[in-house]
Length: 63
Image (tube, rainbow, N blue to C red; front, side, top):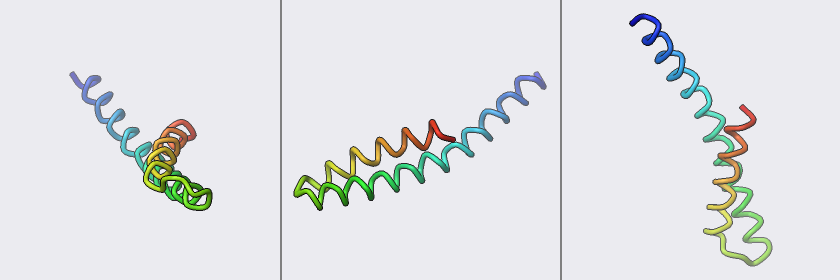
């Protein structure tokens, strides 16, 4: 029982730490995507959505 509890606490802690990089990546990606879309005359909403998704994925993988 103690091993299961320790593994659960470890998983939650690591999940919380990785969420920070995921959120930072999503924020940077969304801002970048919106900026590129605005500069090229594209849809800012779609650019932000794609950039946010890509940034979140990169933030998760890098961390």
